[in-house]
Image 1 (cartoon, rainbow, N blue to C red):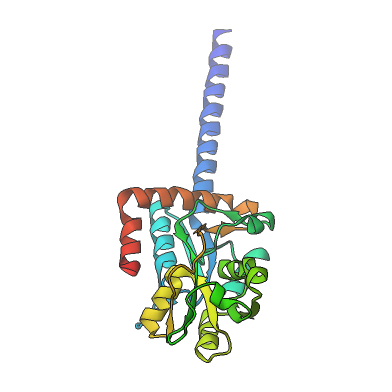
Image 2: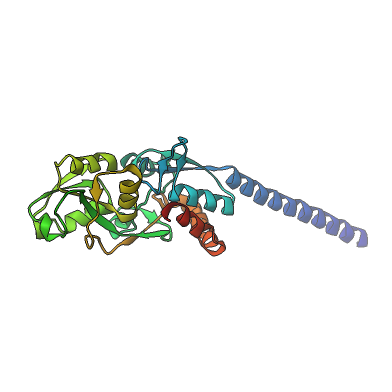
Length: 260
């Protein structure tokens, strides 16, 4: 009887060892699988200083650097695809990309449409800009005029929010450079975009535009976004990494690099 019990205990121990090894192997395999995944992240093409091509033909900007710092902190791999705003949003919606980072304002309309946002990573206002020699200095001066906006942006929403009050006619463009040129050529009296982007483009590109004081919105945060709940893991890593780079100073260094 003693020999039988000993044999049974031995078998149980062996089974336990194999079960433990199996579970460890499964866990290691799962981690390896997650670590091997390359996430596809869509972005805009011209949204300086958040994403743009520099003089060395390198794709750079605040969004680009924040994503790189977060990925390094969290240990995940990604491929950044510069698609443009509309194409980038569409790519995430149909599953051709896993996420979007492109100065996307966190707003209820997008949440209701299925966007799932990270914690906010930058607070931005939207502002109007006018031709350099323009006399427009207030919203009242826009009354009855034509203004230019970029499709699907918070700037477009801002213009529409005051459209009826000031009897505005709104012309919609697919990209910022074309929108700016419409004002410079005199087809529209003003355009509207996120304040840091507008200010940077006027300065860096020498655009014949100016920003009148007091013509900005209340502002809202930008967020990293997914549209498929199955990609929650990526969103969680982004939030964790964002918190870490804010704590260790890398986040502020990125902002200083492009905004100072």
